[in-house]
Amino acid sequence: MAGGSPAKAGRKEWIGLAVLALPTLLVSLDVFVMLLALPKLSTALHADGVEQLWITDIYGFMLAGFLITMGTLGDRIGRRKLLLIGATAFSVASLVSAYSVNPAMLIAARALLGIAGATLAPSTLSLISTMFTDAKQRGTAIGIWMMCFSGGAIIGPIVGGAMLDSYWWGSVFLLGVPAMVLLLVLGPILLPEYRNPDAGRLDPLSVAESLAAIIPVIYGLKEISNNGWKPWPVAAVVVGLVVAVFFVRRQRRLAHPLLDLRLFADRSFSTALGGMLFGTMLTGVIMLFVTQDLELAHGLTPLQAGLWMLPAVITNTISFGVSPLVARRIRPAYVIGGGLLISVAGLLVMAFMNANDDPWVLILGFALVFLGAGPMVTLGAGLVIGSAPPEKAGSAAAINETSGQFGFAFGIAALGTLSIAVYRGAVTDKLPRGLPEDVAAAARDTLSAALSAAERLAGGLGAEVAGAARAAFVSGLNTVAAVCAGVLLIVAVLVAVLLRHVPPTGQAAEDGGSGAPAGPADAEEERVAAAD
Image (cartoon, rainbow, N blue to C red; front, top):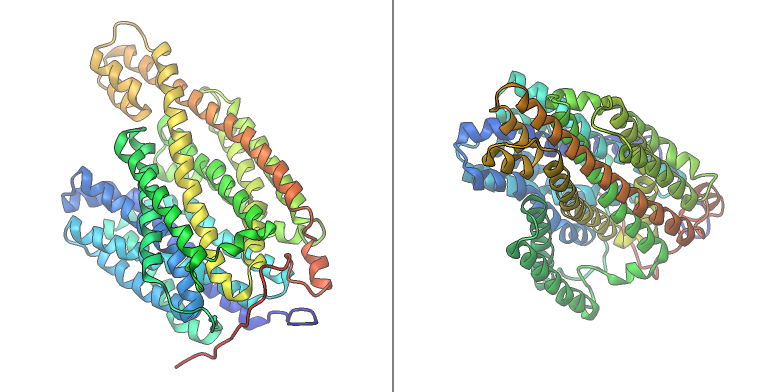
């Protein structure tokens, strides 16, 4: 609203937020329950090892590859329109996944799920920026949206475990369907339409180049995390990076690029994006290590591990809800930096724990990590969206989500490799003498392989091997947590310095601003009435 304070959102917008948030929760939950269902569905569909990998991975590849395209497409054809198309496709693909009769059918359905999923996050986040123009309200709305997005990651094992105990493996794919139907019914009523009238045509070559850049990098990093630094996955990363160079050069020449590189010229945008990239890389991957420690080192079931992780859900929820309120009085740079220091404290707890500690020590550290990560995610997303012109909000949201995908994949590859190296060095020193060579080799491979080999040994020797492997795994976790703490401390300082010019959202709102510095040159925007 030019020359005055932005209009306040009313009841319709808050109900619309609920319509956007519920599918976000269930889609996030759907991703994580897939891992629980894999053993049952593999047996039912007779899927071999390669097919299991594609069933698991194809969703993430398609999601990451199409985010930028879908974010920009939403700006062109209408964000609500794209969201409803994506919700329809997601529902259909979920039904096909649930009732797949062979691995190929399930892989194809999962690929469609990934493409449909790529429409959801950019569309919902950019629609939130359209519905909530007041900085205070937008911060709260993004906090609620983020709570739902992250909550599904940890609630997933609990709900998925209960579903798989009572129903067939395909039931986990049906969790998001009711919410998508609700979105399709209420979306046209409650959600505004928005598109950029000057966006131009979508460039097919740019779309192809973005896919050829992103998917090989994500694939390569995932393979490196699973199998180490072998030639083929490294080559995939290199190919993706080379294509990315050509992609960037093309975007610079186009009048209507798929990815507007001018967004990165804004310091608030680029700093918040970089902070979230490192934050995801360093804190997001910790959840994977915590899950492995609970299930392997402490012998818990997936359902039990999910229940142990509930304190992190609670602290994360508190953090997402409180951060926007605190940022109304304190500059976001200091709220984010202070939050990251809390995460550093949690990582240090994990860095100094030992294999004999009660699980509560691990959970305390993990809860602190998630408590401190909230401001970076919530306020960072608000800065990324708020720093972009309104007609570029979909593209900005897609860049935000893509950076998270890259951060998580690179974090698993780099930190996973570090953890494995520490584990193998530590377990070699701790194993008892005179073990059969096959047992010793299995113990040096991974913790899960070591525990399986230990079960075949008689007497106390098996317990000794298992104890050595668990202690070595915790040594790897200690090292990863210490490295993450050091790097995250640097990120906290840089964010506090580079974003210190951003005023509190309350002050910005009183001054008639949007809560973030002005982005690139304002462009004409158009709000389009709902179409029948």
